[in-house]
Length: 377
Image (cartoon, rainbow, N blue to C red; front, side):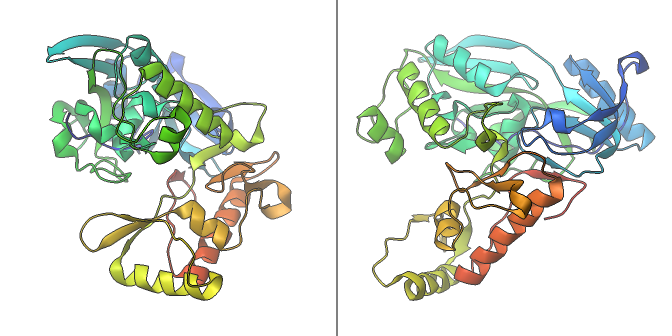
């Protein structure tokens, strides 16, 4: 298996393309984000082929007009003012499985494919490697940008390569190995830049119907196996979906706990000095014998649980924000949710309250995971 790249939909600033007959004006973006927040796109159109997508970006760059590439809208916070340029929805489709030998199969998928549908198809074909990433909203092209991960698996463990449009080199298209993407915890060289557009991704999956080794303790308990065991891929997928539903992390239009951008904060990576200070504050606040979840994250660094810190700072499940229009999920404190009738500023006010509360309580800074468009945290 090779390394991979990061996250959900890359939000890229670029310009107008494609036939004007396909374009619509003043299209509400709230209808196309899982938070149901955000103002209109001045111009909106869809790119249904990789060639159309490349043309759109090249045209935009040549004209200097802002353009936003939009996928599933699951990792996106859009300002109430909307987006003053052109929004191109990535709607490219296509999947292909090719044997690699030694029990491996290369699964090649276009950027506009729905991620969970791709996982479901891999499971249906008895291919292991993606099953623990079930239920994650968004499109395939976004997964490498943030090195999407869940339940002990990251895209970096299965991604082998991508095809990218390089906006710095006249829009040329290049094949890039996963190793060259700088994949790390919820990041890659593509995150936070508009330098490249993912056109398709390739994954090395295992044939034979068994999952990747189950590494996540909670998932292993649900499956009734030891960590490191392998199980039928469908059993792993169903267990992951069950866990995600219990945390409000599977989209359901009738459930406001799923009107979110998933986990709003990443688990903080802290150096040894910050960790020591945080542990002192935790002991002062909660007593010396509290069990603090701390995970190694490389020399001189550790990873803390954002959800654990948020709850211990006084923000429990269901904590309400401005006017009760937003709040923490009643199932999972990492999800900031739209309870109905909210604005983007309502959500950001709640996010700032939580961030500042954790900083004051423990000296640890939380950082947002979603992409912010036209607004600041």
